[in-house]
View (cartoon, rainbow, N blue to C red):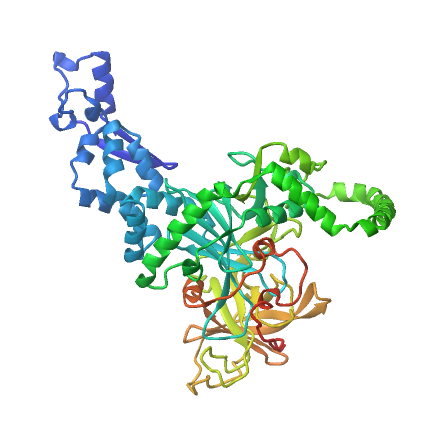
Length: 598
């Protein structure tokens, strides 16, 4: 009797059944003594076609659906797809095995009530829900930009058959985290995350577009414009000024408005009571996207808006004077550019790509002639990025967000992840309203080996709640040497509740300090203490300043947080202007915070 063996190799599921027996059967040979090979009736199709008998599909199909669902929970979606490609019968069976795909959905969206609501909105199709969750998975996580220096941290989390990107606002310690929406990606009718909506300005304003492409390991999100379907990436060849003008014109032309009763609806479920309202909001957004033609604007309208914007920016009475000044500046700039050309071309940036290093910019009118209409698009690309202490090197001329690497805690690296806290001891409490607010810091803790192979714990600043920035975005607030215990003792004996402080572990390290200007901070020795209650505290040796941290569940904080107005859509996606203050708090009147003591 032939045996069935399943192999998982590079994501492909292969089945083999009695290789030698099949070979003998095809050649029409007979074994010793002219005895015919024995056949297993269970492996033969009842129709006599032999399709099921050749690959063992009938044995799989004979399993109860609940057993098949339990098995599929330990597989990946592509494994199920590879299995369905083994034969027609398996393809038909797995396409209708809703429980098997439902088990896949539970791995990506554990909340059972939310999952059932998603499935009902898709016509009870678990396959479509699984397709969306699996396709949108590369977008989940933390994204950032260098500007403003206080922090530009964007987190993505599931909405309602959508993916919602929200920005954490720099703030003081308070019971509720302030956040503003950045964009949403909705599932289309087949479950693909294809429908884009930018947020910005008023709460009821949306700006539709499309998801152009998404790399499975995307580390950069680029906001672009496209003129054809499927969207191409020629937008990157435009000059920066042309890219900025075109995006501003598109958001002015494609704006749509939510109905008043849905403008204040939540973007994600805070409880099961929000699910019906979220379903109604999604249906309204799908209609808006369809009525707006996916946000596509005719080329004639775009050209007219570009011409109008140019006339507004350059009044007729000053046009001649500005042109003369521009020519004078161009002559000087040309001399400097030619002098520096050799030096610049010899050392290309580690983050440069062919599409952004094209020797000649594409004229805007030539880009527009590629199609009859223009629209917004989002592209998730995998780019070669140089990093320094887990912070990617970013460009200030790309409308982009960059993914931050979130390490998973494991044995020997227990403190990896996102942490938050304040300066001072005892540490601040969100519910304490009788004391002055303390600036809230978000730090991304990660492990890295130095040149000698010694393990370091690096705390990278990703958000700073002061009114005016003290240290650059992405700075290492402290670096602890994991293999070197600290000889210092913790300066305080009790915590904020007068309980005795117990130290679990301590490490020697260095904390950030004033250095050579703002961009290049220095360091001073200190110690990192792991407290028994799970908190971390870094103490600077010289002045006994302390930064106390606790692990954060950012998704839960956002769901329980407070939504605030967003900036206009383009700077709301990527704020490219160099800033050292809290530009995101201007609209909702956040109070200033004192600088961190060090």
